[in-house]
Structure formats: structure tokens, C-alpha cells
Length: 127
Image (tube, rainbow, N blue to C red; front, side, top):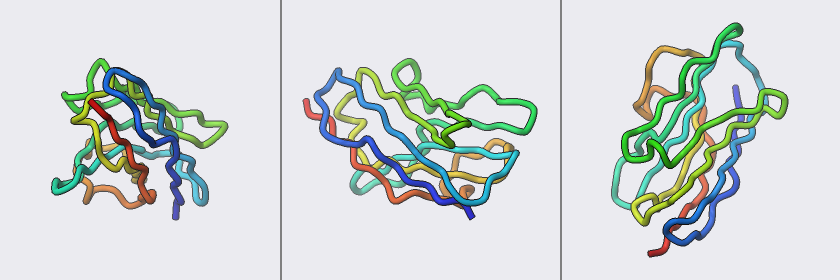
């Protein structure tokens, strides 16, 4: 099993920036997908971005339409950490952000497709 721990959430003004981190520990997989989801109050959990890799390749990242051009997902293999750089944030980005993982690389955007979850970190964007 993989343990995921998020950090970096907080309060930020609209137009500002924030970087979330997700540290992974435990079992490792050569084929894996890591993703950021978010859940605003009263809404379903939605995917924000995802990065997929195998032992020999890394696929182009996925972004949901509302964050394209503003958010960047990345990972540091040596640190076993995934990041979400959030720029030009908007009040609609306010949510609890979750890190998630699954030992597969086929396309998956539903929360139910993911096996491993962090505890979440709150991001609040003030207008």
C-alpha cells in the first residue's frame, strides 16, 4: 500500500500562487498514476490534474479545463513527491485538495478509479 501526505494548502488572495506537495511512502510501483483531486463544499470530488508513468516513459500530464494554463503538475522521483503549482488562483479554486494514486496508467479521471488517498489539504482563495 502507498501512503500519501499532502501539504502546502492555505489562504491566498485571488491572482496569487500556491504550491501543494504530496509525499509518497510505502510500496512503490514502476507503473503508476498520481493525481490531484479537489472537493468544494457540497460538490463531488473532481480531478484537477494527473501524471502517469511507467518504468520507461512518462506520459503528458492531464489537466481539467478550468485549470489549464494556470496549474502545473510535476513530480520529483528522488523525493517521491508530487507537486501542484497553482498560479493565478481564483475563488472557484477554493476546495480541499487531495492527492491520489493508482498502480495503472490507463486513462482514469474518476475518484473511484484511485486506490490510494491522502488526507487532504484546504485551499481557500479570497476575492
